[in-house]
Amino acid sequence: MFRPGHYGVSLALYAPVGGWLLATGQTTAALAGGALALWLSMLPDLDTRLPFVPHRGPTHTLPFVALVAVAAWAAATATGHGVRPVGPVEIRAFAAGIAALAVLSHLAADVLTPMGVALLWPVSGRRYTLSVCRADNRVANALLFALGVFATASAAYLGTMLFANGGA
Image (cartoon, rainbow, N blue to C red):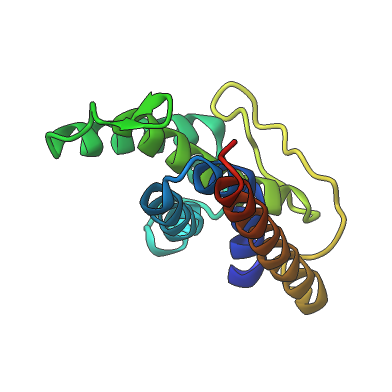
């Protein structure tokens, strides 16, 4: 998928988390988590700028998801604030989870295309695809973006209404 499609899938997958955070009165965490999810959603396409790394190669795999999550955990820990709570988890676990969700959202969007992704590389080179639409399909990218915006707006509305009516 292209950038709008990736952003849309990231927003759609993050929406329940953001809505829950808003419902529990954690507005800053909801906004920060959403920003992190969007910022990292295009990270797997870093491979297009790296020599000798094929597109939809190692950066489009579950081991890469784990690597990014560990890096987010380490970065949050290095700030010295990693053990502060965000709901029932520490900031470092929250950061790792959002980082994993962001990269997984990218992979989910690419699974929709005929090229698919080799999720289990290096264990298996098998590519997983639903072959719904081509990555350059403008309508599909726009629809995914619209879905993400709708899911986010709905979750934000429901979350703030729940909080205003006594919390979740």
